[in-house]
Image 1 (cartoon, rainbow, N blue to C red):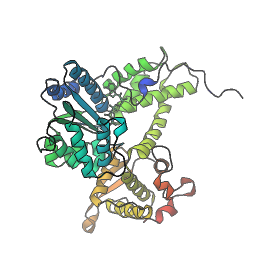
Image 2: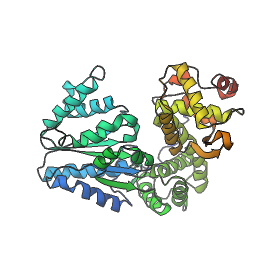
Image 3: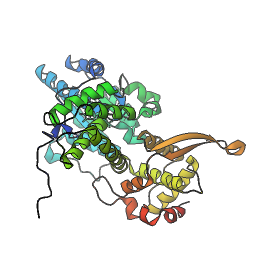
Length: 420
Ligand SMILES: Nc1ncnc2c1ncn2[C@@H]1O[C@H](COP(=O)(O)OP(=O)(O)OP(=O)(O)O)[C@@H](O)[C@H]1O
């Protein structure tokens, strides 16, 4: 058998700049945000201690990459000026409970042979251990909490008491500044006013990129990623225009460009063309939905999405918030999850909507019915089911294990009816 692989190296020169963890040499189109960021962090370099900073904006707007660049500069500058500083970083999407966040913070300070175990310690023990460890540090500490909205109701102490730990007497020596990052625009409004005034000493909003900005960013990456002369005129602009029309998300624009390159490579084309971008567009959309459902939604959001999808398919019922809650509760009971309150499930629906999977309409249900929100699925139910079958690591999901995800081939109705 001949090798099924294509001849290497015709289209791509280097794909590393497209890796998720890659930090670009240059940050483009974010001068204003970087200037505000440096204003917020300048006190550290002058030895006056860290401030609390709240960074927010939609997904793919450069919040993480700009923060990474700022902390790199901070390390360099504090080294140069002999100012001891410890920077701790946690992604609350990965460490999505207060326990995991505390464990991660402690273990970043402790040496590898003295880590706290993941099971066993109580929250109280973890808090006092963290404060002890922090107080023994030389100099100040900056704690970066990315995707803080993922902590849900769990976050009050972390976002209110922690940034004021010295004022409250929990820390005696070390000054701690928290950089909180969120891509949920409603998160800030949902914060307790005390948390808001503590955390938002400095607030920096990252707006969506427009087509011109995305063109500049894509041009920069295209020079690094593609071989010379392999990207047709108009390809970058088309990718930028499509992503700008959606959410102004640089990650999405880069994904589209990479996928167009993959399509061109597969077809053994000498160049990436606008047709390749069109074909890539539908593939990326499919992948985007699968990634959100599989990797970005929490277990509770997945249960909420499954209930909403059932109600969208079922012709007999309407996807009103109230009905969604009932079906959600039934699903929780079957698979042994503790149902959350109605208010919390409404928060989950808001988050799912922000990912672009749902649309919400207010309906007047007549004199007796009052007003209600109808949640319409914006993507195909088959894609949702496909995403719900697996967990982040590609293993079978809890929902699939309990046989909750219908197989589209066999029709979903029977499965749905049992939850109504
Ligand atoms: N201004 C920029 N200059 C260069 N690269 C950028 C810029 N903005 C975003 N990128 C690239 O786009 C991708 C997404 O950016 P980033 O992870 O910073 O977004 P984000 O706002 O943190 O999104 P999320 O909220 O989903 O975490 C990264 O690969 C990053 O390198």
